[in-house]
Figure 1 (tube, rainbow, N blue to C red):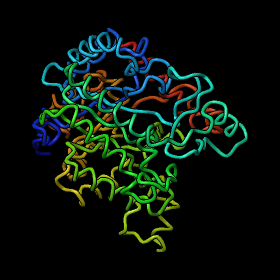
Figure 2: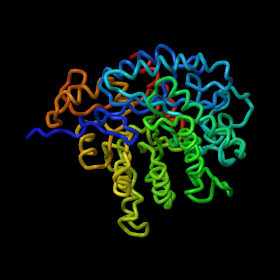
Figure 3: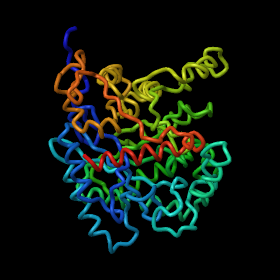
Figure 4: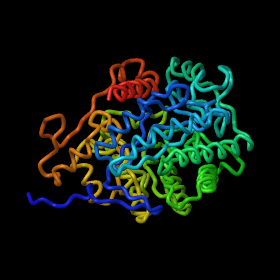
Amino acid sequence: MAHQKSTVGTPLKLSCGLVLKNRLVKTAMSEKMAVGGKPTSAHGRLYAKWAQGGWAALITGNIMVDDRYTGGEGDVAVPSTAAWREETLHTWTAWAQAGAKDGCHMIAQLNHPGRQSPAGAGKRSWFAKTIAPSAIPLNLGDTCIARVASAIVFGTPREMTQADIDDIVAKFASAAHLAAQAGFQGVEIHAGHGFLLSQFLSSTSNRRQDAYGGTPEKRARLVLEVIRAVRTQVPAPSFCIGVKINTADFQANPYAYQDMLCQIALLRDEKVDYVNLSGGTYEDPTMLSTTHSEPPSSSPSAPSGSSKSNEDSASATRKPRDAFFLQASKDVRVQFPDLPIILTGGFRSSTGINTALEDGACSAVGIGRPAVKYPDLPNKILGLHSFSGGISVDGGKDEHFEVESAPGGSGMLAKMIRSVGAGAESKYWAEVMRRI
């Protein structure tokens, strides 16, 4: 087979001027290594290892913009009191410097968990409610034990007031300013995986009837306000602003696909530097599945009433894919050809990566768990300058880089409570990161 220059090794220039040296991005994974909400030397060692591995950019695990609401112990969080800001800046700076080497860029992912913050997580009181666009509790499953677990661990969130919304916008902007001061080259605003901004985007979790709910445009208003506030706090045109959102192709709502396209159009109009397409929530932890399949597309090309659509719903759900959300990404690229897209989730072969890039399904790929198992994966892939012969992984000649499932992640309890498997996977891979 003739060797061809692979797209994965070509640079990608974003509109802010940031140049990715290749198309391989270490996507966000929760490290769970923070102490007192601050990153430690363990973060520095981990990110230095990744930088040496040839990644174009490293997107940090989610940094919580409000230390009252976190995802659990070990999360990095922005302190709510100014007294701790100087110390926080020092630790963030060391973190940013550790990963910004060998042409690698550091991107800080900013997040708020909303209703996905469990009781006891963060500095709020144990009995304080979480916040969300609407007072709708998490649905962790149809079993009695799942309903009890949801009520005890998460409870019913409090619907946010306008003052709450304004405070959240300010906190995202303040966190972005801190990241810029620390030397991060940009931020990724996390509006996916069922966290707070994602809750606003979704008609399932957002039932508001004010300026922040009711239509796809109104549900996107908070995300747009966050982007604008970040730009005000960090006006430098070279500062990268990306947004991570869920694809809608796995959702049962037949209108979700069009809602997603509408909201991506708004992000494009805000001139974000990239959109990171992903998926999954605590209610539907798609991202942590070990079955590489893609749900049927909700694209208008397959009418919902057609026999083909019904057949797709029954069988195509289990169609093997090298990426979870490949078809949705292709559809987005058709609609928005000039918008840089990072496609995250499920890539397990060098051939699959290059095919997605060559076919124009995405501009870059985001890789999570394989990046933990193989920190130098880009160097392994790019070292051959071709994908025809496979890659060398752990001394074996093989173009696939599979990852194992967490022990206990698919047990009986995980089947009864949807988030249990996701929690087991997150904990397992956080432990692997500690050992790198």
